[in-house]
Structure formats: C-alpha cells, structure tokens
Image (cartoon, rainbow, N blue to C red; front, side):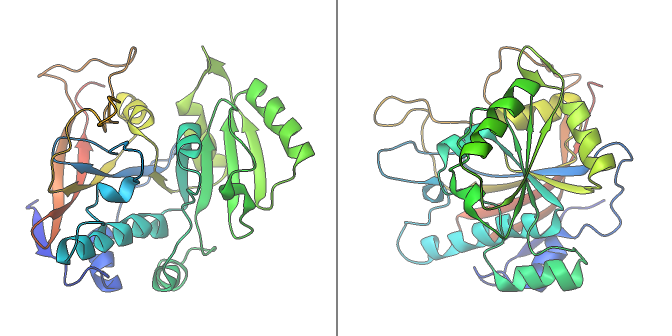
Length: 291
C-alpha cells in the first residue's frame, strides 16, 4: 500500500478532510480487545512539554508563535478532537489528571459532534472517559464535574476502596463507574482491562490519550494498532530552563520489553498530512516483530 500524502486546506480542518484522514471503515476489530490508537504531538527531538514556569502543551504545537505558524496549530487541536470523535472511549492515566487540571476528552467542536452522531452512528455526543489509576486521583478534578460525560475508573481493589470512600464524601457530577482488576506489584493487568472494555463494555475503538509509559505498555503487549502523531517543526532540548527533564514520548522504563534491531516494532506510514511549513501529521500501523 502506498503512502497517501495531502495538504490540509485550512487550520479549521473541514469534516470531509478529517473523515478522509481518520476513517475507521473496514478496520478489523479484535474479538478480545478494542482496536486502539495513540495520538501525540512532539517536537522534532521528541519532547511532549516544555515544562517552563508558564506554558502548556499548546506551546509544543506552536500555538503562541505569531502569524500563520500559530494559526496552523489549530489543525492539531482539531485532529486530536477528531480521534475522540471516532472512538467509543478515550483512555487517560491518573498521572495525566494530576498534571493537567482541566483535561477532559469531550468534543469541543459542534461539527465533530454531528460527525460522531450522524455520520459515524455513535450513540453519545462524547466518548466514555476511562482513567487507569492505582487510586491516587482527586474526584474534585474538573473531569468529574461534567454532566455530559461518562467516566469509568479502572483500578486495583485497594484503589477502588479509596475512590469509593472519596465518592461517598464528595459525589461527582458525572456518571461514574469504579471497576477493579487484579494487579501485580501495583500494576494493573492491562490484558484483562482491554478484555473487559471489549467484551463487557462493547468498546470497539479506543483512543489512548495517555503518556508515553502507558503507551509503551500497549506496545510491549502488541495491543496498540495505530500511531497518530503530530510533528511540530521546532527543537526543544532535553531539559527545561530550570533543569527538569522534559517528558518524552517513550520514556526509559525500568521494566518492559527491550527491543533490538531484529525484533523492534515497525510503523508502516499510511497517511501523511501537512499544513504550512511547520506541522506534519502522521497516521501509521504497528507491525510487531517481538511477539
């Protein structure tokens, strides 16, 4: 299959161009887990966040650069929302909630809600918000104050007890479910989680909006089907001005699969989009060789 390369017509990417890029028509959904993709933005040298005193993730997207460069950052935001539109659920981590006080993967564009409901046939305006956590999260977070979303916390038995106690003291506004799973060394069995999502919750398409450590677990198990990535044309450097190590897409792990040149997963790029001179958008399929 040849790579499809096109330019986006404008930063407020039209729905037809979004559907052309992110179509899920004809994809094979496994029987025991959802079809899953990740979607990240990074600098040319792989940084996900500047970690300066006053900034946010949009700085990576060049949003605050004057002129057409900053205007084109809207395309990344649109495509991120589009991944949510095509998914049945979005997976977040407890760390994401602790780091980002306003995070919520509910659609921010009315035309994408329309796409989701009327063209894709989804039953709800927003995907289910899944949070995988050991239990160390605050149910006062803004995610739990939204009455338009359903949230499912995927946790350990100990974590479930802690969260149920917290819920009793301060009931959230959202529709909240707490589900516990077996764990080893505090790490939840991801295979059982995915099986629960597919078989018990009938989630077919999953957007993995977690950090690199959770995404790497998906790759180690061979259960991440696609990579969707924005490359912003800038170089950040490994450390912030205060000496903090900036987060990378694939952080070093103390445990996990160690790949070598003969078994490392490959990515077959299928679609590439570009807008202006500073933003590239990739969609690729993982080809696992270590399993």
